[in-house]
Length: 237
Ligand SMILES: [Zn+2]
Image 1 (cartoon, helix red, strand yellow):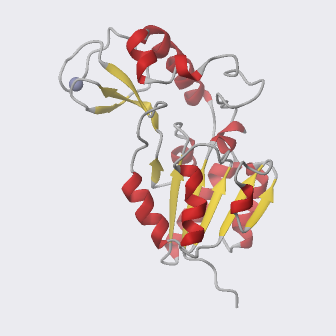
Image 2 (cartoon, helix red, strand yellow; image 1 turned 60 degrees about the horizontal axis):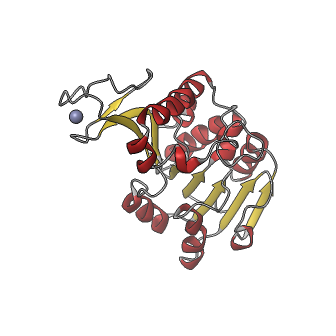
């Protein structure tokens, strides 16, 4: 009988949400391709022109609220439940700032680049669920400061979130799977080499080979909504 992995670390990226219609800066010819991320997704951009930055995130937030999870999100939520049912664990680490994993039913999602449906007060640090547009007229529900709320997402030049928990989960895993990630954004792009250094088998699931495809032991190519459910089924999940 094949021994199935019981502790799986899954890293998801933009490719998983792209099939739900959510684009990124990196899509060639995509809706964000004509924008300069350095003018929209940095602390400096927010300091220099908060209205433009907030408008940009308002637009993206509305897109997230209108989007629906796809078969890749659903398959991961089912795999999490099935693994938990037999005493295992699926650690889901995502680079995505949308809530599609949660809406598909995933119980524990680690958002290393933050969450678009939350806002953070720059004055007191309180993070609040936030579905409406965000303007400089908004006051922090905790401290009352006005004009200090920003999307709770990680901007270029900022430190990703939950790195200690992510590293600990990686060290405990017996399989590392990266889905829909470009392999270009660190530290996430380095996790495959860390996994291999720990002796953990690694698999990439992507539309096309990622920038560090040679670092993976195995690969499945195709849309995440098709390749990922097939792969998880092969694992007995
Ligand atoms: Zn505050």
